[in-house]
Image (cartoon, rainbow, N blue to C red; front, side, top):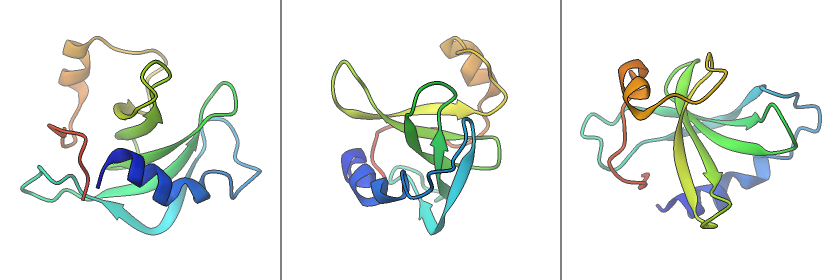
Length: 113
């Protein structure tokens, strides 16, 4: 499944709850994702996240309560992408710093099954 298909499939959940506050995550019931290139089939829980600023809401694929991936539309390309997410961060890290901190599975491609 392509990332845009995941967004289409789960986008209805993004605005179901009008009372979602900034930095709040809400689980999508009985919804899990696996990356097709992950031989261990690590399970990621699907959630909705409201950003700190503005009105954006993202589909999140969370490995645990702190770490996972945000599915977002890149404003420059218009394509959906995954970005590593860690709830304790206040600002982005360099790629090297991110790699040191990341403990969940890292997909090689943007494919999900």
